[in-house]
Image (tube, rainbow, N blue to C red; front, top):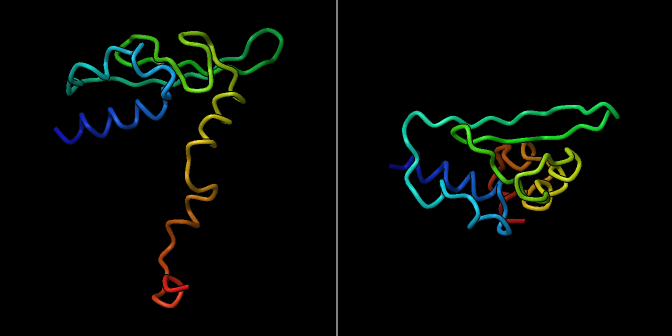
Length: 102
């Protein structure tokens, strides 16, 4: 199914190439009732961490240690490193034919 393929593309991006083979859901099909959660938690020192779960299993995140809470700043830096455009809204704006030719 296209949905399975799209979800696998998204998961492989979020996981990062260093963790691809440690996460078994990329090997087997995604079921129609899959769940994907991202949770941001703050520890007693005030540091923010992101954790992710796919079908109730911890999801390793790119830029972080496998299956450990990940500092939000590390995950954001990882995401910025793989996103082609800093300003997605600007990149998706309609362009005129003269702008395309420049």
